[in-house]
Length: 350
Image (tube, rainbow, N blue to C red; front, side):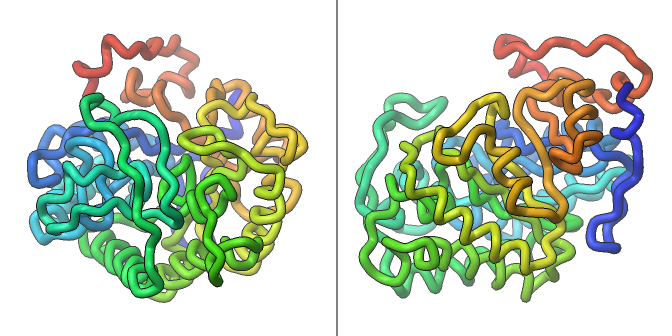
């Protein structure tokens, strides 16, 4: 039984979702050469508007945030106007959509920085990561420059402006991408944050920049329109450290004091366990965070419904199955078989 997936939910007494099924952010690299959303993207999202909420693919907040080809931006008038076409299409189909705001940090690449004139990749510390850019494997990752104090202040302002741009573009709210080994997450883990100033070494210091971004955005567009994705378990472009637990204990306690629309777990498979968290990421977060929580990571409708019934989280985000099944919500409601996702079919799926 999956009936609880089809209950309406109101976030912070403001935004009512028609069901508990969210479409997870999924990088599709479908923007044009100026990182403007395309008509194909409007069609893609509108076809999935039955979701209680769509979280857009990650959207870069400024030119030096880019680490993948053809990922859409939200920092030029053309990009804002392109997103208006997308959000209008989703709203006309009866859906709601949040923009996921993104800076890739040390997995950005200067190859993409033409619009900014910058040649330096930015990160909390000058600690690189092994590997190469997805879909452009000839580009290997560069050793980043440690972000200066002035650059941190500018980044906070740029996140805030991107959130305002998202509202201007017709989004119902934003999800700050603070997970999966990207810039904000890099501040929260000892593997990537080797700073010795007020942004490093202690839990309070390491959470300072992420919380400043959250506060700047909520001040700009309201906490009811602001969500955050986090990855306490380091597993992607990141090595874990047992000291990371204290950082997230501190961060999540501070987030509990704020009235975010929701907190979204950043994990590819929630069956993964982390010794320093005492097991699954979802179990750890739920043990210290009581407000609206979004679970994700290889859940089926049945296992997701069961987890919600057991109060493991409140909303269920679905990723790749939503690519393969634009009518995912209808199929689940009517008990129809789901089309299995495969990488081979990705290019043809809108």
